[in-house]
Amino acid sequence: MAKQIFINLAVKDVEKSQAFYTALGFSNNPQFSDDTGKCMVWSDNIFVMLLSYEKFSSFVTKPIADTKSSVAGIFSMSTESLEEVNTIMESGIKAGGTEPNEMRDYGFMVQRTIEDFDGHTWEVFYMDMSKFPTE
Image (cartoon, rainbow, N blue to C red; front, top):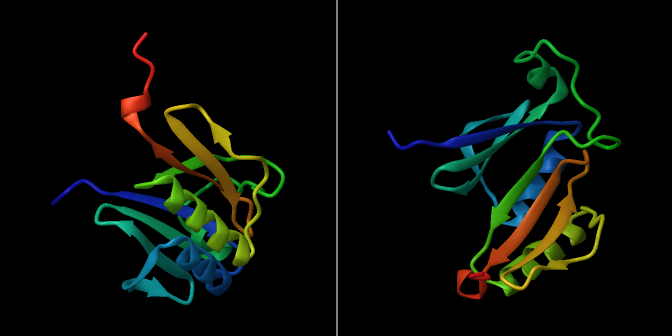
């Protein structure tokens, strides 16, 4: 079996969050989804599990972080082009996400940030390694 990454996020509204992540370009895997959680697919090996607070808390012993007021992690998604970065961001904002800061251009990498309804922070970026500084 190939190595895979599953990012589990506590969300207040599973259906609303599913619609947001669908707008970003994720697809739903109904085999691992129900009313309490949605398995959202980014690629063959990367998944985001959107779990109700009740379901999420059944896996942990610590309190769930309030990601609207504190950062619990930053998740990054690479894209094939700057145009794809902008398309994902525009779709996410139309779906109710927020862009907390301006686009950052590092010369070899362009990065934008979007937060979902629960404040989970995503960096959407395009990197051109041919422009990476060699010195």
